[in-house]
Amino acid sequence: MKKIKYYYNTNTLRFEKLVTPIRVKLLRFFGLFSGLMVASSIVIYLYIRFFPKPGELEANKKYEALKDNYNQLGERVKELQQQMSSLEKRDNEVYRSIFEANPVPDSTRAKLIERQQEIKKITRIDEEDIASNIENQLNNINSRIVFQFNSYEKIAQLIKGQSAKLVSIPAIQPVSNKQLDRIASGYGMRIDPVYGTPKMHKGLDFTAPRGTPIYATGNGVVKTAGLSDGGYGNHVVINHGYGYETLYGHMFKIKVRNGQRVKRGEVIGWVGSTGKSTGPHCHYEVRINGNEVDPVYFFYNDLNAEQYDRILKIASKGSAKSFD
Image (tube, rainbow, N blue to C red; front, side):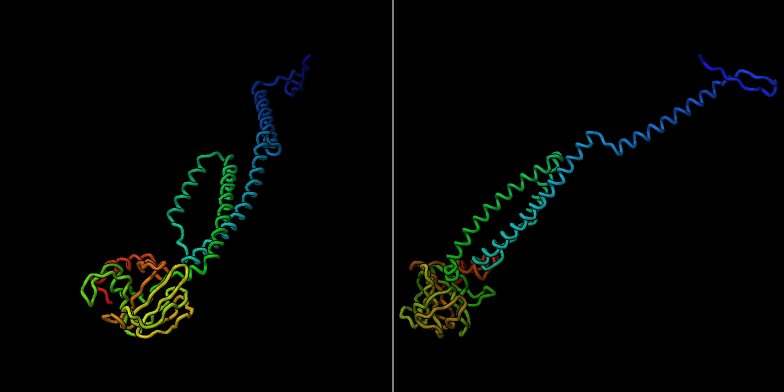
């Protein structure tokens, strides 16, 4: 049974039944409702803030797992970088041993293309697959590094065994020729300057003033040092071993003697015009197993690519006549 409330009316001086207007009831209702909404919002906020949903808990676990995975991958990347540095160092040593020069660096354009390809590849996969994809790539790189290490070990052993051969093979020009203007006559058929008939010219003629130093083009032992009856005049023949010999003709004066060991770049005599010669020059020959070959292919040690291309053209044209 609903309880009836009364109040004392001072105007009528008696108790009367209390009747609440509908407007007041509505205001009270909305006030209570608003309070409940605010309280509910606070409770929901606190719940979300301090009590995450199961899906969020799973996402956090995945994030922590990915974070740990990336940390491990970071350590592996450092190890791979150290191994790659070791490979690069060994690569440089290999190039220096063979060519006595630094290897040509990778093209910047090639690096840019590779980087763009990697970016495109990553943007096509889901974020959850990135770690797995990177790990697969690192495993692949690691396998390649192991292979390269084995390959370079074999190369290093080969070079170690061939080091004596590398310094013995003729590899420089017999006279100083920085301007590349001293080759007067090349290898091949030329007009004999004395008889005026075509004759095989078995070497290169380097014109130079009398007294210009002549250098050994590779390590070896002097086989012949003296005056020739065959037109070379004062000449030197060096046996480099491994089937290689070089001849230096028409010297003004010889510095070395038979049986003497010489090194690449050592002065063995001076330019002259002795023997069958029409002017001061050095006639230079390279022989492999007794057969004369074009010496122009044995200047790789003191010429860059542009200079080598230029000297090939000079030697191919040259004078129609030889100097000897």
